[in-house]
Length: 90
Image (cartoon, rainbow, N blue to C red; front, side):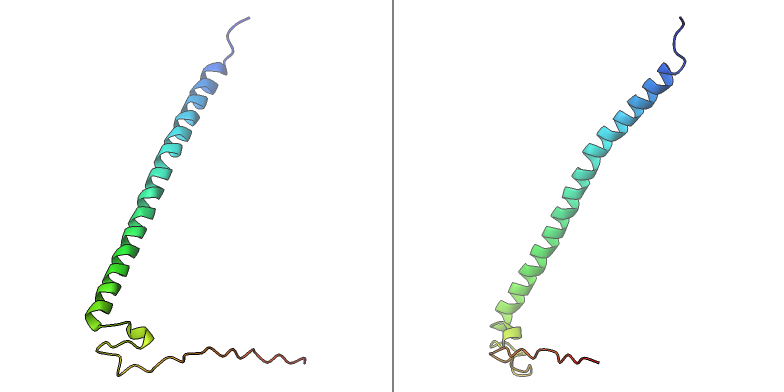
């Protein structure tokens, strides 16, 4: 019996597939974590900017605080009244 003519190509293909799988297993989670960390940093920076703006204005403008724009903004209602939609049977 001679050597099988398919052994070397199958071995090379298996090695290539294994190398690609290991590369994907290493590469994508690493960049996913970088992206998540970048998003978290952006959210933290926006929150810090918002809190800084609230401190400079003297209160939460959206809740009717004592800020510079509080006088021009309408007051929000203190209670929430829910109006269910009217359903009709046609």
